[in-house]
Length: 140
Image (cartoon, rainbow, N blue to C red):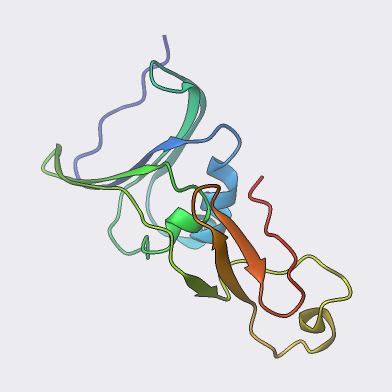
């Protein structure tokens, strides 16, 4: 069995759908952070079968909109080696410049300075759509 060391302080993003850890890693821009980051892919899970996990040894990241990437994740805030707080992110009604429209005919492809704005159109399925062209955002 794989053993990844414990975290004394920082953030553990747990219950990420398989394949989602790298998208969250990119969104949080963790490659540019000066801290330890552990990405565990395809970890065994009683609840999900398999899951991804990210352990980050810092608090200097914005985790407010992570629900856009995966609304089923659990965010654990670790202090002194114990979980101080557990959060389940909510889906914001609208997000700006967090996700980008992939439609090549969208106005955001032509007008580079235009903000990428997505509205939540199906809370149950976690579907966001571009406000300009209605293109659905695909998570993975």
